[in-house]
Figure 1 (cartoon, rainbow, N blue to C red):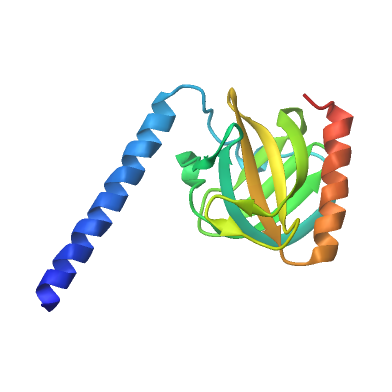
Figure 2: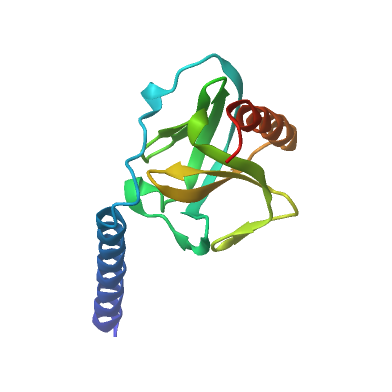
Length: 164
């Protein structure tokens, strides 16, 4: 019985990994998604920073479809830094990335994203351009006070650069 259980688990893991790789290749070959911008490219004077959880990045027009390229499918601990030139998302164990201000579309709050629901306005939702594709990244900030401060700084950044 144990051998059968192990075999079933191994097949399930194989199928999940194969599906993930297939989806990643499909998104990469689509040509619409660009590469993530390296965190070291983020310039400007830091305005505000906070720790929290990177929850998900989804397609803006398909909120139930997760972006998998660049390791964006994995949630985990993160630190968000807002500068006067853009946003830096430093993730633990995954690729960190920057979002220049000129790629920001909208900033808001959300209560749910793909496979995650929280209290009212518990997520910080940042819509931006990844290549030619509009995506939304959701983060859950550890302290409520930081969320309010970040939200205001991000809105100022979007207004400064002009919303699309």
